[in-house]
Amino acid sequence: MARAASLSTEEVERLRGDVAAGKPAGVWFTAAAVGVTAGQSGKVIDFTEPAEGDFIQVRPTGSRDELTFSPAELTLVKPPPKPKQAPAPVVVEPVVAAPQVVVGIEPAPVVRKPPPHKPAEVTVTLHSTLEGEWTVDVLVGKKRVVRWEPVPAGDVARAAKSLPVGVGEAIGTALEAAKRRQLARVEQLKAELDAAQRALRDLG
Image (cartoon, rainbow, N blue to C red; front, side):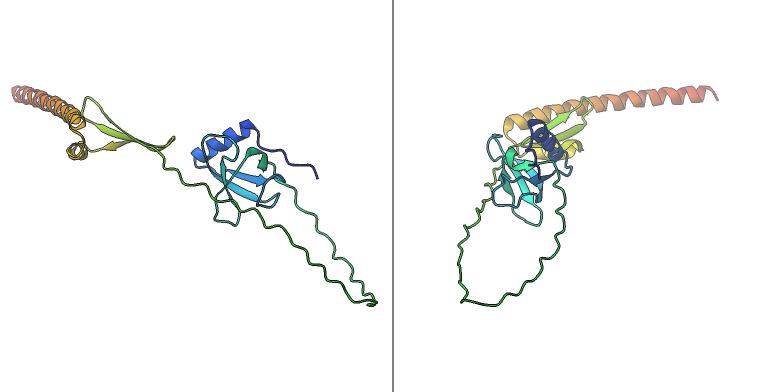
């Protein structure tokens, strides 16, 4: 049976994209993988940094452990199914001597410890428009978990009270400017409404 090709740089990057997009990222273990069976399948969970050595986190099928592997230990080529073997014939031979018992000691399997969980940096960005509309964007590490979701201005004002003075003042200035623009807009609409009502009365 031909040896399965290990992951190329392009395939690693494609798996990165699938994980970031929340898509299934299935792989199979090559004969170079340690602690798992060659040909067994698994799912890529994440990537550790720097991308050197064992940096691909994989959960083997049927296991809850998340183990790290190198590109040489993984492949995108699904192994062919194993051919079914016919049962070996049972041959009964007369016992001519006392059987010898041979005790073999198999080496203990290498157990990989899950990598320590590294806390990711969280970046929260607030954005306001001139009309006083606020949105928030959240990055956890390099993954965007919230993409410019609307936030009520009242919630922003309450949150600003518990933030450092400089941040609170900047948010307060933006809120006050938006309030003045809205008040000016209200006065303009009132004037337009009065003019429309006068025109309506003149029309009888």
